[in-house]
Length: 276
Ligand code: ADP
Ligand code: MG
Image (spheres, rainbow, N blue to C red):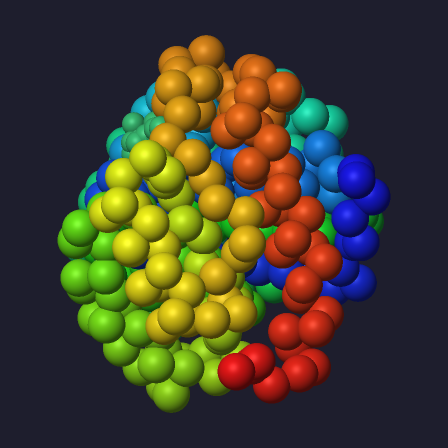
């Protein structure tokens, strides 16, 4: 089914987990590309100085390119840094450059340092004729000011969880940070989505971790699970997401399922109390 409903207002989703290598970037770019393929207008904001999301989306992000750094530190409007991905006409990226590595420190002395991305996103929404349906923010692996900017700018948090032994370790720290943000900086932020990634169904451990996550987070966890798949990890080296690199692969199909589910379940989740 390729006709997922489009949200009436922009859903700003931050993909966060303070652990590195759990599939944040892979999830952000592939769910974003899947949403674009399903007909949505989508922006990915690359908030990680490593710029992996910019690479995977095939946009320029060498040091001279206007980037999210200029938005956060020099008040550039997002419209001046956004590039179209070569993959889909409705997929866009605000790239990160190496300069963003310094932003974590430079932000400390800025006015409204936690709100800079939020203000930029609000200005963007006011200035574009065609609103984005989804804005995904790819976070660095830390709970510093860049990630806090993402939490303040977003309406939803999406957490990718890698199905391995240490998966749940550190998660309470992340949940604690989200609670602090809700209390002090962004009361409407909500954890909406957990996605199990790099799943290898042949191992008992992966199944056990998946069961643990589902029993703990119940309806937040998508039914779709992303398998560990070579095609997914190959795609970025071609400047592509797996959605266009190999559309019929299991990895692409799984990310399309995850996107479809996120599009469909959203309305329910905002209006009903959690099941169980
Ligand atoms: P993070 O952004 O959390 O640091 P990444 O998305 O960069 O994590 O993923 C870490 C590594 O794992 C990358 O090399 C990526 O290509 C690989 N990877 C991510 N998801 C999968 C998957 N489902 N199957 C195989 N490799 C994956
Ligand atoms: Mg990353």
